[in-house]
Image 1 (cartoon, rainbow, N blue to C red):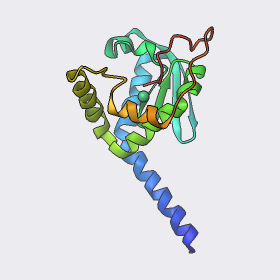
Image 2 (image 1 turned 120 degrees about the vertical axis):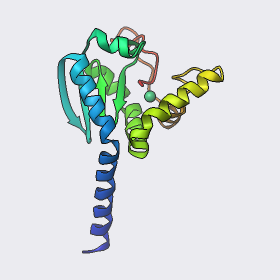
Image 3 (image 1 turned 30 degrees about the vertical axis):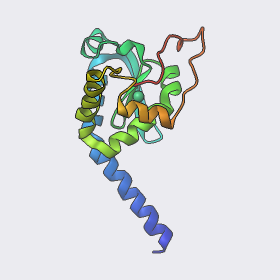
Image 4 (image 1 turned 135 degrees about the horizontal axis):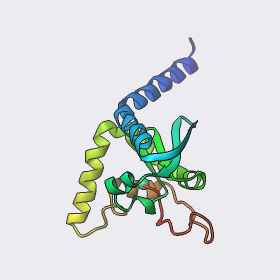
Length: 158
Ligand SMILES: [Zn+2]
C-alpha cells in the first residue's frame, strides 16, 4: 500500500463518518419529503439525495414562509420545489451539507439557537443566522432571472 492509497482510504473513511454523523438529519429530511411532497422524484447527485416535488399544505404549516425559498437541506438530503430551483441553489445547499457533516444532529439546535440569538439582538432570523452568513460568504448565487420561475425568490435557498 503506497501513501496515495492510504490517503484516499482515509478520505473515504472521513466521508463515511460524515454521512453517518449527519444521518439522523438526512433521515428526518427524507421522511419530511416523503410526507410533505406530492409528485416526488429523486436522484443522487454528487453524493447528495435531491428530492423535488409539489409541497403539500402541511409543509407550509410546519415551516411558515418556506414557499419563498428555493430549496432546503437536511443532512445529505436537499428538498426543492423544482429542478430549476434545485440547480440554482445547489452551491449554497452544498455548503449546508458540509455544515451538517461537521455539526451532525447538533446542527438543528445550533441553527435554531443562532436564529433566536440574532432575533433577540434585532437581526433577521434567516439572513443573519450564522450558518446562512457562512454559506453566503462562501458562495454567491446569481440573482434569479426576472420572468423565470425563479423570480421572486428571496435569495439564497435555506
Ligand atoms: Zn442557506
